[in-house]
Image (cartoon, rainbow, N blue to C red; front, side, top):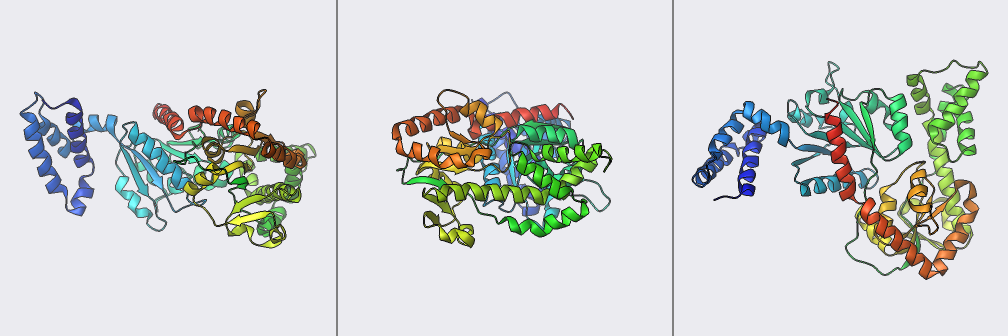
Length: 466
């Protein structure tokens, strides 16, 4: 007798034959696939009371039996796109797909190539358990008559956003009717709920971390796997924003520099409130506020770059050796620092090996004030002590106890960073104990297995809104 696994495998293959009829017809394999399934079904029919061939016929005709099966077993579609951030986001898509597959879900990965968006038309009319995009622009694609393409695809559309949502303003405001968001910062959840009514619901789920397959010798005392960006690159855009906003950009910059613990929208809100009280401007609507924040986004980049630069300079000026990766560090005043050791650029996967070889590694948040990031998770899972600016999440989970699990610093006390780093470089026992405490916590809380399970719950929750 065939076992249940064999029968279910056959049913899934029969279902896929019906679901991807047009694809198999186009590549010329449909008839052969159908014949092989008929022959296999006839053999199975002799060994079970079920009729596999009858089920196959339902799938091929895409009738009500097919529709019922499809509603329960339809796949999760995940978009990949051109590498962004050295392929980090595509790595997220692969990690989620691998875990979903291991959990028994049918998964489709689709490579979204700019200029070939018409290939998405193959999905119109199909049902998916969910369509996931990693900071994708796909959800804002529209037909010439203005209809959103993804309104023609059944199932919740979930955009996983790991930057401030205002960067994706155009895509969120032009998204499909059944649009959802997953983000890694609790402030971003609130921001989307307050300023993007186009989004049905937003979930807080940070990315997970990954392990390098082998424990490595700790050859690097301190590393930073991040790029250098010159703040002056945004000077022209800032001046344009300053002119258009009537001086608000400059006030926003001053507010952000004065309140380093605040998310961008809080600093902008302070500027707006001050102007409203002075009768300089009317209270903006939610849409007007998000337009203003988007206009002034060069301020955000400039402030972030200046803070990153100050942190790195403070570490180097103290005499500590810092290992960095990539050519972005080879220009400008960095060439004056002999203790800045520049290595070739590394891929996201290779960065895991760097963390495994590092005693300490530096993280500088991109102004995520209540967040967890994959870089921090990767450090912890590879037995590397994290050195990072604070976020509410990190303080609550890894810094709010007698024995801290990472080195968290205050952006208003950057001068204290070198001494804290030097202490843990000189005290091996305390450093190793910190790394192991963080590893144990991250192994249960910050893995892709854990986070993918949370994504599945978000998918189920999203379906309740449809």
